[in-house]
Length: 182
Length: 103
Image 1 (spheres, chains in turn cyan, red):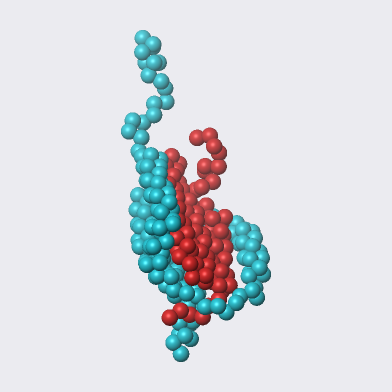
Image 2: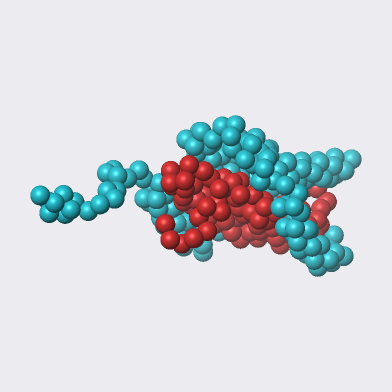
């Protein structure tokens, strides 16, 4: 009885994840898309928990539904796109534009589906808790932690350098012209 | 308590989400949506890793998920910085405006 309930929750959550991601891709307004992405992330967190990975589920909520989403929301607020961009999106998303890539992706998905079909064994999933993950992460995989910190530092410095406002606006003419003119 | 799902079902779900994200990357011209769709694709990859880790009862799946999440966070930080620069130069977030290498 409880098993069937858990199965039902899994299928329901999968449907919510796929549906919210589909809706997200087709939104015109960036903020609406972000809100649907939050729903998708939370559904994915539930799926991770059901698959026996509670640590990954917590990370999904904290990082995707928390940090990454805040980044996106801040950038949307800074850009201040407004109604004009919604109209622009409406003009861009014509069936002639999205039909071809969608069909090609569908073909790709069908190929993957054929590859997966009928090869499943009924072995059950196991719970891998945070203790096992921590022991492995800070034991044989310590290098992964170091590399992750390098990567995050590089991302931080790179984002700061790229997005920095130039202090002095670039002059179209070199300053030597003004000196040599008189 | 774990639902009776096979590895195939989870992998099909991951492939579904990956395909939707791929459609988003290919179709949308708004750079913000391209980045969001990339996040969805990375998320689907993480789901496949976690399913494999739970299937073979190994913690390596979640460690790879951790690496994928770190990669996604760094990628989105740099990508949003590029979006800001793009908007500052062109007053638009159309990704087709930057299809030339020359500034």
